[in-house]
Amino acid sequence: MKKLLASVLAATLLGTVAITASCGRDEESGITNRPLDQTKTILTVGNYNGGYGSEWLYQYIEAFEKQNENVSFEDGKTGIQIDLTENKDDLHGSKFTTKMPSQDVIFTESVYYYEFIDRDFMYPITDVITQVGADGKSIESKLTSDQKNFLKVDGEYYAIPHYAGYTGIIYSVDIFESENLYYSKNGGFVKNSSEERSYGPDGKTGIIGGVNYSLDDGLPATFDEFFALCDEMVKKGITPFVWTGKTRNSYINWLLQALVADIEGLEQTLLNSTFSGTAKNLVEVSGDGVVTK
Image (cartoon, rainbow, N blue to C red; front, side):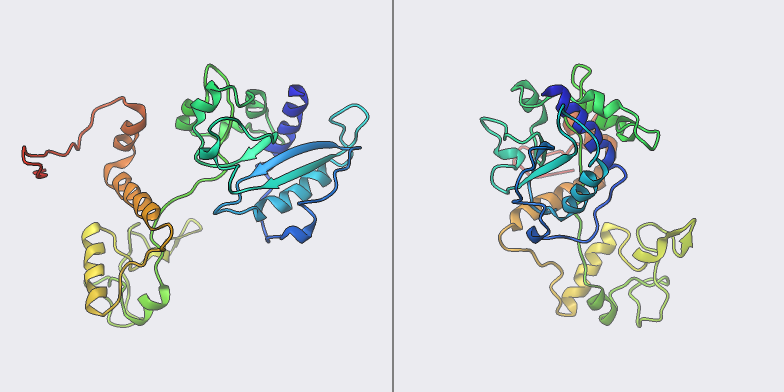
């Protein structure tokens, strides 16, 4: 079974590099809750359909099954069928407290990686990660050095990242346009929509080398500008921040973590996980608990 799983995983994971998600599908597409064809190899896949949902997976499954319809992974069987389970309760990494779910491949988040390895919950998939794909590259070659150091345990890989998420601030373009909340190139805020805006956080504008640097024009480039923008919005009777109700605390915590990482930079932020190096920006607190620096 382990050899079979490794073979199927090789075809699956190396394929994910080339296949991208497009239009969403619902369960009527036939991807979920369909009869199993025992003449084919059955690969069970679990997906935590939280924020990213499962739509990204539907088209890939269709393409993957089509690509391997004449491939034999087991004696006496031709082709492969993905048996997809979507679950927000049992397939979230933090819920795996006593045992691993039964699926062969699981797309999840918030995984306690080293604990799962210690509990023997996962097969090593090093041969899959190091195998060279059709594009002439291995999955390992596409990982950062930090990812490799984190994921490789005693020379083996057991899992890989499948998405990256970033916590930031979403703003209303319509309100910024109508209320002239963009920064002007000449200082202060623009007085009308035709006034040239500042170059934003990236300090560039226009299209350079095929990259559009004008998308952030007029947005605050420093924390001082950001807070001044909030003050300007309050003066205009606009609420600068609106939080969701149910997940408010989580989003606030994630935003604060992102702000701290932005202020500290990569090297100082990594001290929290590597425990190696020199902390340069320690807070100083007086005996009565007042932050003095």
